[in-house]
Image 1 (spheres, helix red, strand yellow):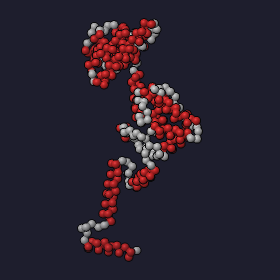
Image 2 (cartoon, one colour):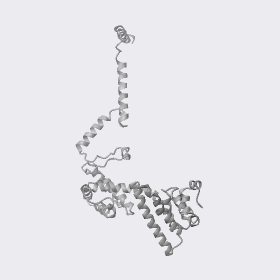
Image 3 (tube, one colour):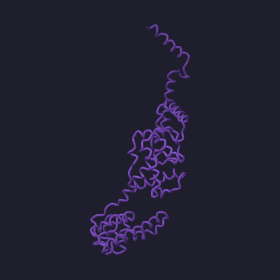
Image 4 (tube, one colour):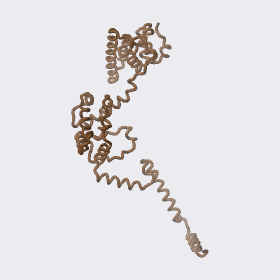
Length: 329
């Protein structure tokens, strides 16, 4: 009962996963047919099997079924290791082995009945995981000068949680020197307010912990923002801007590492440039505004002064007409 080429090409990834997981359909498939089910979409069928294999035996709780589920979980782990090898080393000869260990064999060990496979929840959480990885990388880059913890152990070691509580303890107490103590600790690590609000807080929430910064008094938050906007707290590490950040509007805050004299000079320079038309729309609009200004100036100059080809007689007539107007009055 081998599948023909047309039948295999008409199957979708959900249909292929359903055939592998349902024992009534899988018993008629050979090993070659099962592997063909994996290659219908080798990037999705394996995740569909991993997402739904426990649902096929949901109503059975005996020891044998539990052992089969545990064995399938181990096979998924081996398949993930081999899949990572393909990604890092581009060794695509391992793809059939990945199909056997992470899709075909686990579905053979643990199967039963599923009406329709559910969509892999991993894909729904991938963007959140990628953002958490980026935040952890940026935070570890700033902490590299003062700490030896790496990105992988930043959260699991409890270092980030301890730093988070140390920073929030003065702010939650409401003492008079709370801002000074917290800002001083951030300066010691070369961090800014956004590292407390965005990086440490979001990484904490990502692990299911509570957001403690939202219970801080809004007046304390505002005072902390004003302190950082004063310009006396420079970051030790400056990360290159990403493509998305280049398109964002410029921040209204004082740039890091810019003292009051430089800020005043920049404001005066910006005020001088603001006098020209269409000056806030970027470099292209600035050039366009200057061209318009030159064209208008040329037009006014041409209207005010006679052309070089004007004869003295015509100039005299013009002066005569100018003198005749008062007599008419």
